[in-house]
Length: 122
Image (cartoon, rainbow, N blue to C red; front, side, top):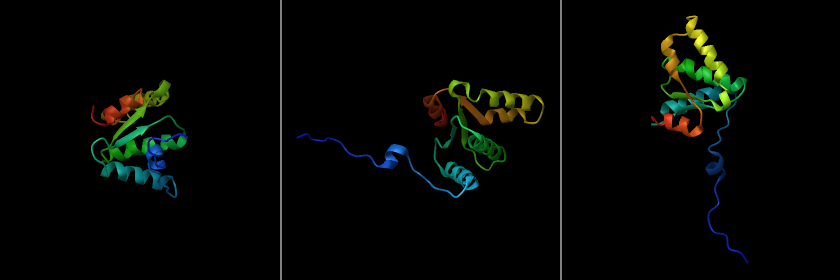
């Protein structure tokens, strides 16, 4: 017969921790709390997504502006997905709806490796 060598991985080791929350507001509150309580390298990396992702990104940016958390926020800009949002931010700053210094709240990186390195302070 054959011999298996190695160890089985738990689902958490494969997929990460799964946390069930009752609604979107609870999810955003939990994300903010976990980042605020986290250590070095804690923050948010936004992947491409839909309305829920946009809502989460804008809420984390707004909460950062208000000082609710000091977590770093990065847009993972694969294939230019976030380019229209970045154009909107530029326009909002130009039209004085957003302060110029707020531009520094969001970082933009093109690969997961670059985003994680930035989040860790690189």
